[in-house]
Image (tube, rainbow, N blue to C red):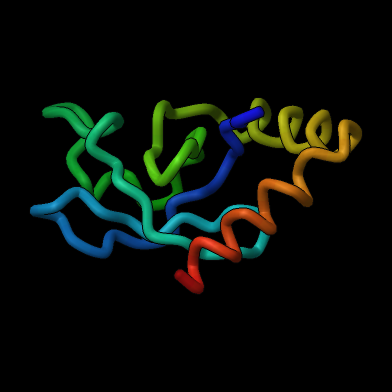
Length: 93
């Protein structure tokens, strides 16, 4: 099963390529933010935003409350640890 997991954008890595660093449960990873960038939300305005991350892409913006609820539910389901491990492993590839 593939899950999206909430993360918070902590910095913009490359404005032109629309790449950002997202903190997902204490693990930082570069993700593509093209799906959440538009005229109203340029890359620089994305720092601090909560997003739903799936296979290296920030798929959508979510609010902090929704992020917390989702993390809590995933933790209860035991899925967060598996997703975080997958992220860690992909960072070493």
